[in-house]
Length: 418
Image (tube, rainbow, N blue to C red; front, side, top):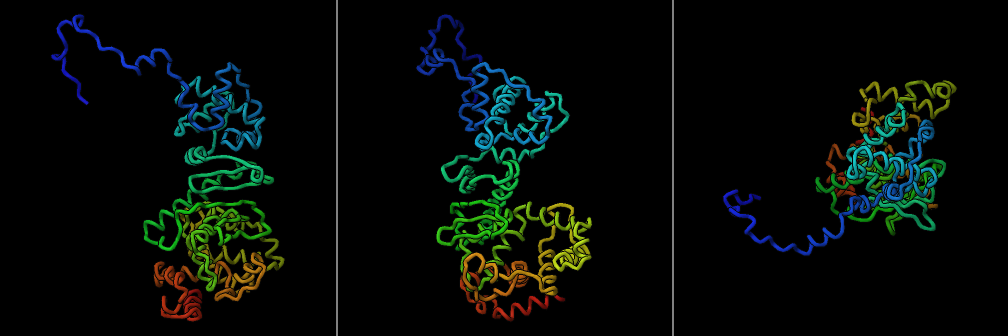
């Protein structure tokens, strides 16, 4: 906006009657502006604790000895659920960090998510500790946006927009051990939904639904989705996107190979959750470093299979450097072929029976998850994902592909062994 020039100013300002102050000006003159207004409205619990202590003149504790134990650095994350997990330790950290940032950088800096990791590292150095705060800034900012609550059943209820995680407890772990899971699972789901929409693949899928995850990490069971309400029960951390595709509407079991293969395709093979690739890379690295040599040399079939998978993956140029370079397609095909050759794998029908307590005679139930995924990947490459989804929605395999299941399976096996 341009203001009037100097020529518009009266020659004798003293002869000009000043305008009467408006009501807003009167109010501001009578009531000083609250310098902490933005902090009070932040919604972050650690800021509330820190601000209360600061306004009450409470001296912040010297936490040098506390943070000299590197295991305690996790308390600097200060997400809301820490005050339910361990309030006794979390509150002094919140008070000390608030006082440091406010005194060194000012009130606005306290809620500056872009620089928060830097401020936390500076705080540690102010204690005389030669250590950096290591949480990635993008994770820091994302987790600070969570809505946290609890109730009589679920001690930790953590939400991001339309995604909610329910934990009865953090089991034997600490909140920090769940932060990567929360970040990569949720951002991966958002990326997956964007991918479906931008590529016109979301027809027939409820991408706007509320995604409710009930997390136990009970490794003795299987993750599953209750089709009547779409609630997802997670026993294995890398299954969240697979189950989300089920919850969106991939629920028909007549061709179980197709429904499970589609969920694996979108939920794992496209790489929306970096932790999945990182876990596979870790297994391959352990094989490379000889962790399973003793078992394999003793003839344990499962570990012999692991070694073969590693050898085939690397021999065919598979990368293990970082998640973005990991070749899901190659890795899936190699596992599928190795399983078939060794005849060591759990079938889809077996898994279905364990989850649902009833026999499964659906088409493709003799395949494993990796085999079904490899078959779907082959069909996507050969016919396109649109045709694969059309086959699922119609459940008419022959009409969609021009071939029945057995013919498609035969073609896939020929490809796998070529």
